Amino acid sequence: MINKIGFLIDMDGVIYSGVQRIPGTNEFIKTLQENNIPFLFFTNNSQRTQRETVLKLQKMEIFVAEHNIFTSAMATGQFLAQQKPNGTAYVIGEGGLIQSLYQNGFSIVDKNPDYVVVGEGVSFTMDRISSAIDMILEGAKLIATNLDPSPKIVGWTKPGIKATIAMLEEATGVKAFSVGKPSPVIMRQARNYLGTRTAETAIIGDTMVTDILGGTQMGYYTIMTLTGVSQRRHLAKYAYEPQMIIESIKELTLEKIEEIKALRSLD
Image (cartoon, rainbow, N blue to C red; front, side):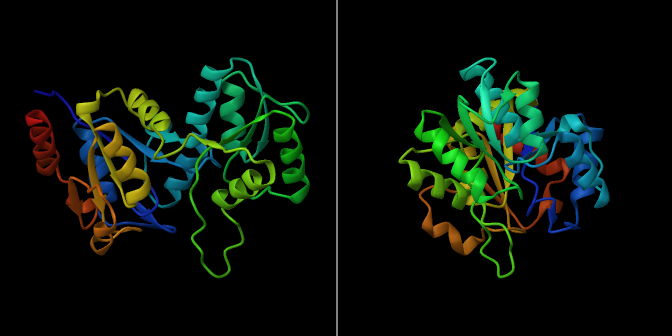
C-alpha cells in the first residue's frame, strides 16, 4: 500500500504549447497544491534557472514556486559534482547551466577543463566549437545536458543540441554522456528531489522517447498526453507503452489521481 503519489510533469506539449497554456493546466496544478500532492515541472531545457522558468510560466498565467522546477542543468551540475568534486568545465550553454555548475562547486574555465559541457542555447559559434574540439582531443570528457533533436521547422534558427553534440562526436571520436531524459541519472535525481519512492512516482509527458521511455525504465507510472509530439498512431513503433493515455492534462482530476494511487498500490 502506498501513501502518496507524486508527479514529474514535462512542460512543452503538456502544460503549454508554444506560448499558450493548455486548457486544464491551472485546474490540475490547483488540485495538486490543495491536496499536498508533490510535483515537479521536469524539463530537458538547460537554458533557464529555476527562477527564470517560474517567470516564463507566470507570463502564461501558470503560477508555481521555484522548488517545483527541475531541469537538466540542475541534474548535470549534481552529476558532475558527484563524479569530480570541485572540477572544471568549459561550457557551451546558457545561464541555467552555468549557475548550476557554480552552485555545485565547479569552476568555468577556458583552458584545460576536466569536462566540456554542452547545453541548450543561442551562444554557439564555430570558434567555441573549435575550442571544444581541441579540449576534448586533449582529454576533456564530453557531457551533454540532453540530446533533444531540432524540431526541423523551416525558419528555426538553432541547430539543436543533438546536432551540436553529433558534430563534436564526429570531430573527436568521443561519445558524449547525456544526463537528461531519458537517462536514469536525471530520472533518479528528479525523484529524489520530489521526495518519492519509485512506486510513488508518476511521469506525465508527450514524447515516447524521453518521458515515457525514461519512466518505463525506472518503473514509474507513465502517462502520455496527446497535446504534444507523440500520438496514438505512433505507439505501434515502440516495444513499450504508457500505462495511461489522456487527451490532455485536463483529464487528471483528483478522482483520476486517486485511481492511479490505487493502481500503484496493487503493483
